Length: 297
Image (cartoon, rainbow, N blue to C red; front, top):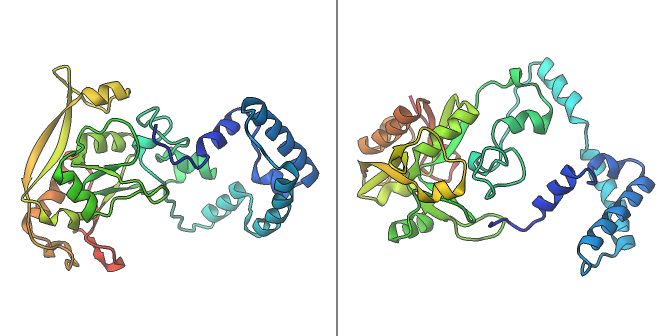
């Protein structure tokens, strides 16, 4: 299904089957940790007879590693509660995208965790009522690593151009990312799940060279316009995309430092996103530098 093959899936499988090892085990009674580790190895070698593990060697490694990480370990529920009651500002970054969420994403082409806004509560142990602003971060076009439906994917020279200009290669695996036009039907669905209070649109400058830019605004399946993202990959593979075509701007946006510096057609592109999603765009990114993130009025 196109995973990174770094062990995330097996780790979450152990979590679900209740035989996983947690950090509290590692920094706690090491004898008990060692016994649990041996049982876990026994479990996996029974499932995969060719798996070879130097049990005592690995336990010795963990004995040293636990002392290295011990100063960085904290019981997070009470820690976060204290920060909240002291009115501290807390910034939480969710990884990946809603479409990779284990529950709301394009199953089975998803990750193993909740990377939508619900993961803030389940991952940190904070109550929902304290969550304030929810900012959605999107590229000015769409990318995906791995398998799964991609309705607005460009398999032509335009897709290759996006890939090259945007340096679209996976951080973990180095695999080239699939590229396509921005999919506002997908973004609407993400907004339904997350309840965005603002958007940040990054990499607008990658679109500087296009004469025309398409934006997907709706899906049509079996002649019917959908009002949500399809639940099955089979349906995602079959949808037709309704596009709007916008004029490009054909000038560099990299030196823009306020919204009014952007070419009119670039401003129109951002306003189109806002009008279809019903959420204001708060920031636009036009380059790699920190000051390339410009506020929108």
